[in-house]
Structure formats: structure tokens, C-alpha cells
Length: 448
Image 1: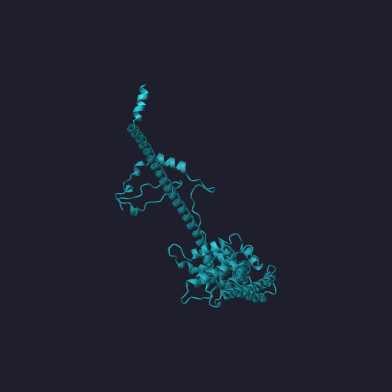
Image 2: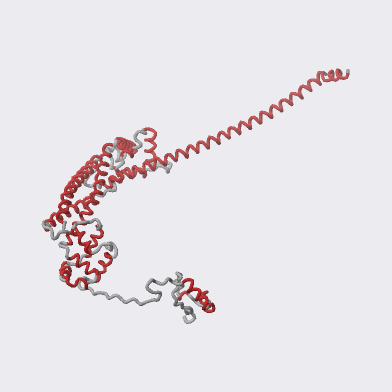
């Protein structure tokens, strides 16, 4: 676009204005920027003032711009560029505060205080192949000529059995966290099963629902039912009342409120149910299987570490202590998990359902959903009662006002009738007096 050109070029060392440029393709002949004539404002004094006011501070070395010598990049000898890049990222982030020797010592001593599971897992992912590590170990005399990534890989390759060491350290670090997470989950489920089995309030509520259902189903194929699957509890709201505003849950809540208030707070008996429904049996089983496999692998690995490889090598000592503790903890967790499975099977069977075909998470979730929907129905009932009270009060006030007006109109009519009656009485007396002559006698007496 020949009509557009950059007109001013300032090369002095001033601060820069951080604006957003209008792309050249957006500047047409009719735009404002195509018509500007800023070159007419060029002035040496103006530019001098700009340089003086907004000059960049000179560096300590020199205010002049110097061309820095380019660093000579060392070529990779063994590992591939991708592995080098991965190591570089790790060295400039998670491991930037550790020297290669410090990292080596931490791994040999099984000291994970400065190494998170994610860092150790990254090291495992980025480890060179056994062949590459063997090649790296041959470059001991050329260490200084290696690039930082290969120097780092060289240090790792000289740690005996580096891969199983890191795997064991990751397992140890994660074991405490996983065990801490699993214990309460097992406890929640066992406690929830006990609550469902012993809650009299919840049981009475189910009895009431069974009674209502059998009464309503009289004469149908579902009449005379001895029990129902608990997933039906989530469908109670599907049975609408005649007003089409309320449903069976509202009716149930009202019935308990009015007739059996001692059972209405059955949800309070099921405090662990909400947490229990979030526990995944599949996930627990997977975690425990993973623990068992890792414990087996660690036990096998310890056979290679009966004698330390160096003064810093404490793998055998540290991991034997950990293995003893972890075995005991795993056995407790496994026993509790087995007990949990029995409790779940028993509670499902207790309510007449097939434990093999019924998913525990769904079973608990259906009851939690019912509890929450029931509480919602209670709240809605209370709101409807309040609305009805306000409506009745307004109706009563209108009736009262109507009666007041009617009484007032009646009193007004009676007053008019009374006044008319008094006027007619005076006229009657006067006419009688004229007829008898008494009116004239009164006038004569006044004259005398």
C-alpha cells in the first residue's frame, strides 16, 4: 500500500509505549490514520526533550548497546533432543534449587523430603533407556564436554538400579496419602450400613409408605405387596395430587408432621449416608490391588539391596522399615475393606434386594435423593401453609370489612327511619289539636 509508510523512526534509547498497533491491512484511504500528517510535527527540540525525559537507564557495564558473544551450544552425544528438552524443563523448574550431586544423594538415601511424587514420576518418564545409560557411563572422562541435560542423565545413570529405586520411593510417598484417604471412606460405608439397619424412624417411614401404597394399589396387580425396592423412593414425587401442585412426597411429609412427628427427622439418623454414597468400590478395590502389587515388587527389589553400594546408599535400611509398616497397614485396610463388603451385602439383603445385582453406590444414592427430596417437600409444605394462612387472613379481613360496612349501612338506614318517625308524630299531634279546638284555647290564653 504505497500511500502508507512509517514516517518516523526513533533509534535513541528511550522507553517504549506499550500500545496495540492497528494492522496495516485495516488502514484504508478513508480511515483516520491514512490522513494523518505527523511528519509535519517533527522537531529536533521535541525529540531531544523526549530522549532527555524518557531515556532508558544505562546498565552498570555500559550505556552503549553491545553485541553479546553467542554461547557455543554443545552437541548431544547420547540422548535424543526430546529427552534433552524434558530434562531441561525439569532442571529449570522443580529441580532448579538442587545440584546434581544433591539429587543423587537424596535418591541413594531414599530421602523424599525435597522430592514430590510428581517430580519422581517425571524422572521415571524421562529416564534414558538402559542402552543409553550404559553409553553415558562410558563418558566419565568427557563429563565437562557434555551439555547440562546429558550431565544430569550421566549422574542418574550412575545410581544403581535407578528405575526400581524411584518406583519404590514414589510408592512409599504415595502410600501414606492413599492409606489416609482410604480409611475414612471404609468407615463411612460401614457406619452408613449400621445406620440404615438400626434407624427406627427411617423404618417407620418405609412402613407408612408401604401402607399408603398397598391402599392405593388395592385391586391392582401391585396390591398386597410385602415390600418394595428402595429405588422407588426416588419416584414418589411422580405421583401427583389432584391439585397438580403437590405430590406423594408432600402428602407423606404432611402425614408425618401431623400424625407421626416423632419420625419426621429420620434423615438425622443417616448422617454418614451422604459421604458413603461418594465412595467407589471399584476405586477402592483398584487402590488396594495396586498397593499389594507394589508391596510385592518392593519385597523382591530388596533382595538386590542386602549390601549397600556406597556409604550414602540407605535403600535397604529405609525400605525394610517401611515395608514392615506398610504390610501391617495394608492388612488392616484389606480386612476393613472385606468387612465393608460384608456390611454392604448385608444391608442390601436386609432390605430384600439382591446384593450381587445391586450397586452399592446406587443403593445409597437413591436413599440420599429421597431424603433430600423429602426435606424439600417439607419446606414447600411450610411455604404453602404460610401462603394459605395469609390468604385466609386476607379473606377474614375482607369479610370483617364487609360486615362492618353492612352494619354501618344498617345503622344509617335506622337513623333516617327514626327521624322520619319523629316528624310524622308532631304533625299528627297538631292535627288532633286543631280538630278538638285545643289549639285555639292555647291561643286565647296567650291573648289574655
